[in-house]
Amino acid sequence: MKSQLIGFLMNFWISFSPALYFHSGEREEKCIIEDVPSDTLVIGNYKVQQWDIREQEFLESAPGLGMFVTVTTPTAEVLLRKLYGPQATFSFTSYISGEHVICLQSNSTRLVAFAGSKLRIHLDIRVGEHFLDEAVAQAKDKVNEVNFRLGHLIEQIHHISKEQNYEREREENFRKTSEQTNSNILWWAIVQTLILISVGIWQIKSLKDFFIAKKLV
Image 1 (tube, rainbow, N blue to C red):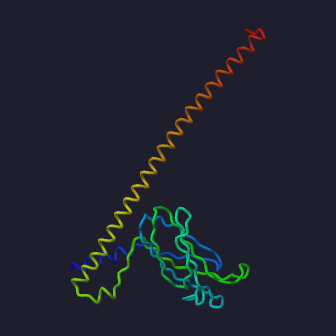
Image 2: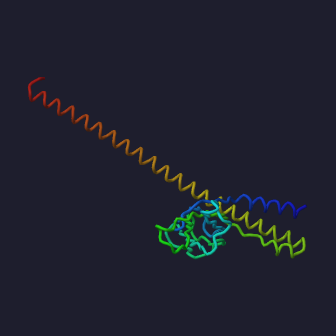
Image 3: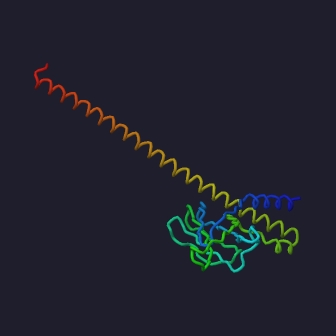
Protein backbone atom coordinates (compact mmCIF):
# COMPACT_ATOMS: atom_id res chain seq x y z
CA MET A 1 0.00 0.00 0.00
CA LYS A 2 2.79 2.40 0.91
CA SER A 3 4.62 1.56 -2.32
CA GLN A 4 1.46 2.21 -4.37
CA LEU A 5 0.88 5.54 -2.61
CA ILE A 6 4.44 6.74 -3.25
CA GLY A 7 4.21 5.54 -6.85
CA PHE A 8 0.97 7.49 -7.29
CA LEU A 9 2.55 10.65 -5.89
CA MET A 10 5.55 10.29 -8.18
CA ASN A 11 3.37 9.71 -11.24
CA PHE A 12 1.27 12.73 -10.28
CA TRP A 13 4.36 14.91 -9.95
CA ILE A 14 5.77 13.80 -13.31
CA SER A 15 2.45 14.26 -15.11
CA PHE A 16 2.09 17.75 -13.60
CA SER A 17 5.00 19.00 -15.71
CA PRO A 18 3.47 20.31 -18.97
CA ALA A 19 4.69 19.45 -22.49
CA LEU A 20 4.09 21.47 -25.64
CA TYR A 21 4.78 21.52 -29.34
CA PHE A 22 5.27 24.37 -31.81
CA HIS A 23 5.98 24.85 -35.49
CA SER A 24 9.20 26.29 -36.85
CA GLY A 25 10.89 26.98 -40.17
CA GLU A 26 13.85 24.87 -41.17
CA ARG A 27 16.39 27.58 -40.34
CA GLU A 28 14.25 29.48 -37.85
CA GLU A 29 15.28 29.78 -34.22
CA LYS A 30 12.56 29.38 -31.60
CA CYS A 31 13.07 30.30 -27.94
CA ILE A 32 11.15 29.87 -24.71
CA ILE A 33 11.75 31.52 -21.33
CA GLU A 34 11.90 29.41 -18.19
CA ASP A 35 12.01 31.06 -14.78
CA VAL A 36 14.37 28.88 -12.73
CA PRO A 37 15.60 29.16 -9.12
CA SER A 38 19.34 28.97 -8.51
CA ASP A 39 21.12 25.61 -8.18
CA THR A 40 18.30 23.76 -9.95
CA LEU A 41 18.51 20.95 -12.48
CA VAL A 42 16.53 21.49 -15.68
CA ILE A 43 15.94 18.58 -18.05
CA GLY A 44 14.52 19.01 -21.55
CA ASN A 45 13.25 16.40 -24.00
CA TYR A 46 12.42 17.22 -27.59
CA LYS A 47 11.42 15.46 -30.77
CA VAL A 48 11.44 16.96 -34.28
CA GLN A 49 8.95 16.03 -37.00
CA GLN A 50 9.43 17.16 -40.59
CA TRP A 51 6.62 18.12 -42.95
CA ASP A 52 6.16 15.76 -45.91
CA ILE A 53 4.93 17.68 -48.95
CA ARG A 54 3.77 14.55 -50.77
CA GLU A 55 1.90 13.03 -47.85
CA GLN A 56 0.76 16.44 -46.56
CA GLU A 57 1.52 15.46 -42.98
CA PHE A 58 4.34 15.45 -40.46
CA LEU A 59 6.67 12.47 -40.51
CA GLU A 60 7.30 10.60 -37.30
CA SER A 61 10.95 11.67 -37.35
CA ALA A 62 13.36 13.95 -39.21
CA PRO A 63 16.36 11.73 -40.09
CA GLY A 64 19.60 13.57 -40.74
CA LEU A 65 18.32 16.78 -39.17
CA GLY A 66 19.97 17.95 -35.96
CA MET A 67 19.07 20.68 -33.52
CA PHE A 68 21.27 23.29 -31.88
CA VAL A 69 20.18 23.80 -28.28
CA THR A 70 21.31 27.05 -26.67
CA VAL A 71 20.63 28.04 -23.07
CA THR A 72 21.31 31.61 -21.93
CA THR A 73 21.33 32.83 -18.33
CA PRO A 74 19.64 36.05 -17.09
CA THR A 75 23.06 37.72 -17.39
CA ALA A 76 23.26 36.79 -21.12
CA GLU A 77 25.92 34.14 -20.48
CA VAL A 78 25.71 31.05 -22.67
CA LEU A 79 25.23 28.13 -20.30
CA LEU A 80 24.77 25.44 -22.96
CA ARG A 81 25.25 25.29 -26.73
CA LYS A 82 25.34 21.85 -28.27
CA LEU A 83 24.22 20.01 -31.40
CA TYR A 84 21.85 17.10 -30.83
CA GLY A 85 19.96 14.74 -33.10
CA PRO A 86 16.30 14.94 -34.19
CA GLN A 87 15.27 13.49 -30.82
CA ALA A 88 17.30 14.01 -27.66
CA THR A 89 17.48 14.93 -24.00
CA PHE A 90 19.49 17.89 -22.73
CA SER A 91 20.08 19.19 -19.23
CA PHE A 92 21.71 22.04 -17.36
CA THR A 93 21.98 23.32 -13.80
CA SER A 94 21.25 26.96 -13.05
CA TYR A 95 23.64 28.86 -10.81
CA ILE A 96 21.60 32.07 -10.53
CA SER A 97 17.87 32.67 -10.22
CA GLY A 98 15.95 34.25 -13.04
CA GLU A 99 14.67 33.84 -16.57
CA HIS A 100 16.73 31.39 -18.64
CA VAL A 101 16.24 31.46 -22.41
CA ILE A 102 16.16 28.07 -24.15
CA CYS A 103 16.50 28.22 -27.95
CA LEU A 104 16.29 25.51 -30.59
CA GLN A 105 17.41 25.80 -34.22
CA SER A 106 17.92 23.14 -36.87
CA ASN A 107 21.36 22.56 -38.38
CA SER A 108 20.05 22.60 -41.96
CA THR A 109 22.78 23.60 -44.42
CA ARG A 110 20.35 24.93 -47.01
CA LEU A 111 20.16 28.65 -47.67
CA VAL A 112 17.40 30.51 -45.89
CA ALA A 113 15.65 31.26 -49.20
CA PHE A 114 15.43 27.52 -50.03
CA ALA A 115 14.89 26.18 -46.51
CA GLY A 116 11.12 26.09 -46.72
CA SER A 117 10.45 22.85 -44.87
CA LYS A 118 8.19 23.14 -41.85
CA LEU A 119 9.12 21.45 -38.59
CA ARG A 120 7.03 20.46 -35.60
CA ILE A 121 9.01 20.41 -32.36
CA HIS A 122 7.67 18.59 -29.32
CA LEU A 123 9.31 19.98 -26.18
CA ASP A 124 9.03 18.91 -22.55
CA ILE A 125 10.86 20.97 -19.91
CA ARG A 126 11.12 19.63 -16.36
CA VAL A 127 12.49 21.93 -13.67
CA GLY A 128 14.04 20.26 -10.65
CA GLU A 129 13.08 16.84 -11.97
CA HIS A 130 15.34 13.81 -11.45
CA PHE A 131 13.98 10.97 -13.53
CA LEU A 132 13.40 7.63 -11.90
CA ASP A 133 15.28 4.76 -13.48
CA GLU A 134 12.46 2.21 -13.55
CA ALA A 135 14.80 -0.60 -14.61
CA VAL A 136 16.90 -0.03 -11.49
CA ALA A 137 13.81 0.26 -9.33
CA GLN A 138 12.40 -3.02 -10.63
CA ALA A 139 15.71 -4.81 -10.13
CA LYS A 140 15.63 -4.10 -6.39
CA ASP A 141 13.40 -5.71 -3.81
CA LYS A 142 10.25 -3.96 -2.64
CA VAL A 143 11.82 -2.39 0.45
CA ASN A 144 14.68 -0.86 -1.50
CA GLU A 145 12.28 0.26 -4.19
CA VAL A 146 10.15 2.07 -1.60
CA ASN A 147 13.25 3.70 -0.11
CA PHE A 148 14.41 4.70 -3.58
CA ARG A 149 11.08 6.29 -4.46
CA LEU A 150 10.78 7.91 -1.04
CA GLY A 151 14.22 9.50 -1.40
CA HIS A 152 13.21 10.80 -4.82
CA LEU A 153 10.00 12.23 -3.37
CA ILE A 154 11.93 13.96 -0.57
CA GLU A 155 14.21 15.46 -3.22
CA GLN A 156 11.19 16.85 -5.04
CA ILE A 157 9.84 18.31 -1.78
CA HIS A 158 13.16 20.12 -1.29
CA HIS A 159 12.83 21.48 -4.81
CA ILE A 160 9.28 22.69 -4.15
CA SER A 161 10.48 24.40 -0.97
CA LYS A 162 13.27 26.07 -2.96
CA GLU A 163 10.78 27.27 -5.57
CA GLN A 164 8.51 28.67 -2.86
CA ASN A 165 11.43 30.59 -1.36
CA TYR A 166 12.26 31.92 -4.80
CA GLU A 167 8.66 33.03 -5.35
CA ARG A 168 8.64 34.77 -1.96
CA GLU A 169 11.84 36.57 -2.92
CA ARG A 170 10.29 37.66 -6.22
CA GLU A 171 7.15 38.88 -4.45
CA GLU A 172 9.28 40.85 -1.98
CA ASN A 173 11.23 42.48 -4.82
CA PHE A 174 7.98 43.25 -6.64
CA ARG A 175 6.50 44.79 -3.48
CA LYS A 176 9.57 47.00 -2.99
CA THR A 177 9.45 48.07 -6.63
CA SER A 178 5.74 48.87 -6.35
CA GLU A 179 6.26 50.90 -3.19
CA GLN A 180 9.13 52.80 -4.78
CA THR A 181 7.03 53.48 -7.89
CA ASN A 182 4.08 54.70 -5.81
CA SER A 183 6.42 56.95 -3.82
CA ASN A 184 7.86 58.42 -7.03
CA ILE A 185 4.36 59.01 -8.41
CA LEU A 186 3.33 60.78 -5.20
CA TRP A 187 6.37 63.06 -5.23
CA TRP A 188 5.88 63.80 -8.92
CA ALA A 189 2.24 64.74 -8.25
CA ILE A 190 3.37 67.09 -5.45
CA VAL A 191 5.97 68.68 -7.73
CA GLN A 192 3.37 69.15 -10.49
CA THR A 193 0.97 70.76 -8.02
CA LEU A 194 3.67 73.16 -6.79
CA ILE A 195 4.57 74.05 -10.37
CA LEU A 196 0.92 74.74 -11.25
CA ILE A 197 0.48 76.91 -8.12
CA SER A 198 3.69 78.82 -8.89
CA VAL A 199 2.62 79.39 -12.51
CA GLY A 200 -0.83 80.53 -11.33
CA ILE A 201 0.65 83.02 -8.83
CA TRP A 202 3.07 84.30 -11.48
CA GLN A 203 0.24 84.77 -14.00
CA ILE A 204 -1.91 86.63 -11.46
CA LYS A 205 1.03 88.92 -10.52
CA SER A 206 1.86 89.55 -14.19
CA LEU A 207 -1.76 90.35 -14.98
CA LYS A 208 -1.98 92.71 -11.98
CA ASP A 209 1.24 94.50 -13.01
CA PHE A 210 -0.15 94.82 -16.56
CA PHE A 211 -3.37 96.43 -15.33
CA ILE A 212 -1.40 98.81 -13.07
CA ALA A 213 0.90 99.75 -15.96
CA LYS A 214 -2.08 100.46 -18.19
CA LYS A 215 -3.78 102.36 -15.31
CA LEU A 216 -6.79 100.11 -15.55
CA VAL A 217 -6.94 99.72 -11.77
